[in-house]
Image (cartoon, rainbow, N blue to C red; front, side):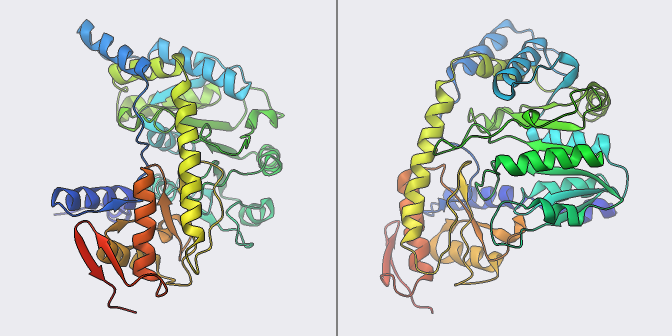
Length: 405
């Protein structure tokens, strides 16, 4: 059987693979704790469910315009005005099957073979792979100062004649870092000066803590015209806990959106009208669920930080948003893949290797589960790694003894 070279070179999604592994273990009855999950546990907003149910009851389930149903486009326009202080028109909006699909469409629209895209480490695992699927070249920029926020000078040093775009994800998956307003101002100014596309992945921008403010990039943009190369990606998956609805959107200049509509028309026609209707309900309905989720996540973050602080040898930068942290486990292993496998085998806890995010020796831990899962999960990891921790532990109904060094 012949498989294309491109398909052979694309890496498997580590997070999806770990989700599947955790599911299989749980079905076997193993007491696995999933600290790798990127899925909030809160319920979908009732306005989304009611809208969805109403559309189903109509039995009028048809194709939609490629760019999205008018009700959802209007909701996205209103959301952009309310949260970005930016007025856009229907010609500036494209609804897709989740933020990941939106990013895919953007890169397919703007990249030529061998064009380079600057990706700041730590980065979401799919960025480099999607870029390679477009025959582009991901250029990874890693901060030299040990922090999770990129420095403008590091980015400038990696921009060359083939650079087409820069992707910024703040609040950041996997670190939970929120980039400073000074940095956002600098990167907007630099991209406008160099004529580069600036792709802002804002999927977590409502999930921030400690009164941290996520600045609107439009605040710093001088180019207000339809020639602007500023592109915003967002969606309902994270802030509304609607991961299974797969609705995201792009805000960009009309020319980019027009081209993206053609791309989307050929690769998936249109998102489901049922799911779009639900997303419109979430955006236009009562917003209390977003704040409730944010408060819950902040509390969960605090619990995880307390547990990690008692862990000898672990260095953690306190996240300001999302539902992830990225502790440094160098004291125990510099091989995050082997470490993650060891923790799963010995402690039955799922983590995500930092190598997948461009940060070796780190593990991504999620705190969007329950407090019990967080406390017990960290206790198990500590038991497996820290020789100063108690030698015995209960995992499920089994009492285990640490018999390794």
